[in-house]
Length: 189
Figure: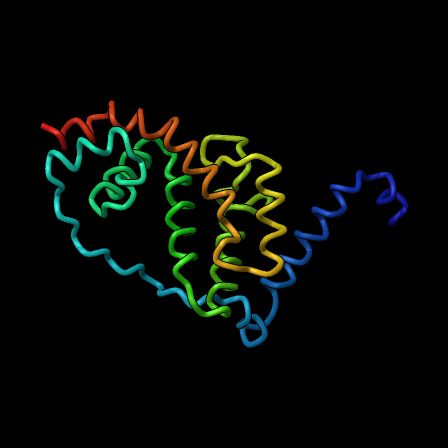
């Protein structure tokens, strides 16, 4: 029966083991699966309504992705724009990393690191950080490998390399498209 398994490539066997582990976790009784639950509220809290920026401030966003992302209204507008292009994952990853860096408790940091890993980095993640397609965060294999190594012992800087890579991609690609978009043009009228 298992005679044919030896002929399969090593990566197929690894993937099968991953799937088996995930299925086993799902089939466990709720009492024993409590370790896998991350304490996030069921419904995300609504962010406070952001005040519309002045014209001067909005004009600065053309040249500074950092200023755009630091402004709640700018971030919300930028995310809406990216959502309209089905490419919000990079901004979501950046925001998740910013939230992660603010975490003080080592336990919560490990929980958040696990959540970011499962959502953005691991192979076949919903918003995989691989650079292979539209609905994925885009980082290269080397950056992914370094990030995974950093997660062995989570620290506030575990995702820094990946976050900087994503920031550079958004600055080079997404920001110029945003500035040309109606989202931004309406803002500076």
